[in-house]
Image 1 (cartoon, helix red, strand yellow):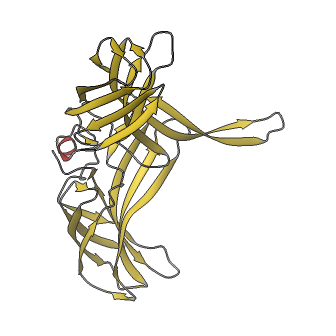
Image 2 (tube, rainbow, N blue to C red):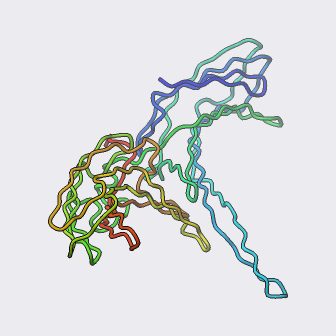
Image 3 (cartoon, helix red, strand yellow):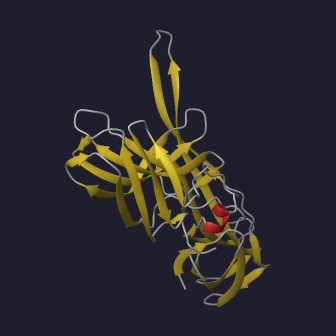
Length: 299
């Protein structure tokens, strides 16, 4: 079981959790052990799951001469949190140690941990001795709130129309085809397989053909910024001419840090698989299909 040690306000802390990847709507069991360096009096021992959302946006101002200035900002928002009272009044003599078990609920819909620049969600577990008229003693440790497959498949989280289909058609005028993936949702840190089938409208000479999983993270506020993260990429073919129906198998593993499909109070994350034909001196033809990504295979 993951465990963390710390020291704060004359108290040595050890916080232990049965797991540090938490599932929405599930209880997580843990224990807190405190050792007093000197006499400690506290009104209560509290534990809470703390979530903070961050997003990036820009504002533009114009001065009296008509010159404009664009400034980038980072906003933040504390997600709803319900502290759990683990113990009432706590009194510790110098050198005394006590251990307290607890159960901590996770929010029904997260949002999950998101590791991106323009939209980010961080979660931590905080245990605190609440002192009257003095500084509280506490320990805070990082955890991950996962986006499980079940929430995505159940439609609780909004996804694009065909993002959960095993196979979906795709076209861009010069190409037509289909992209199949297994499993869907894809799972961060887990392998996947698939097949890309396509045919160009006429023979096309390429320098290479590659497939990519692209994750889009966007702050959905006024002036909100967005980014595209290439979570996975593979070259399917080198230089050559494509003139008829072509099929490529694909296989890969998404990095464990891949942001999952999610909506936050101030942002959104969605994903697609893209086939790119790298053509010299011309716009690259693309095939795209929407996909979903979970951060755990647990239901």
